[in-house]
Image (tube, rainbow, N blue to C red):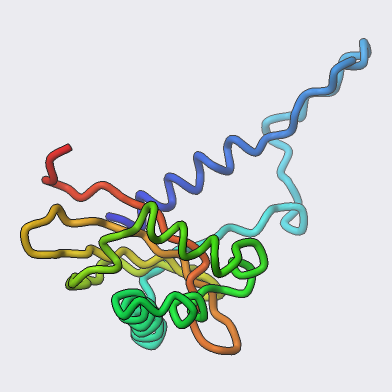
Length: 170
């Protein structure tokens, strides 16, 4: 069901990527393609097909998120930052990373239990999405959707965002 939702979300994103109309369109009417005209196969854009992560991808992603969370709990922002992807590190300094965690993701610093959910990728398996629920006694649960990329050092966190948990009060 989640795969279908991600496919629909991808379709909505792709639908929004249509070309911007010209400011001064030509007064000459454009030919409208006949409905029976088919686009040659070489002109079709490749379709991204999402799938559940394989066990090795899932284990690698779980290990990365767990190690980063353990480092944050220990107050070792430098070690936690080492689990960030190279592209993340190119745009966010260690100090900015620490500030981001302190400002927006404080539950990661406490005694939380990680519950891993859906893990989705495509056939290239260069990037995956991993849902994680952080549960701490006496606190609301926090749902995070991690985006991880495959690097020479293994899976690295490219970003994370909150997601609403079903049944949680607002």
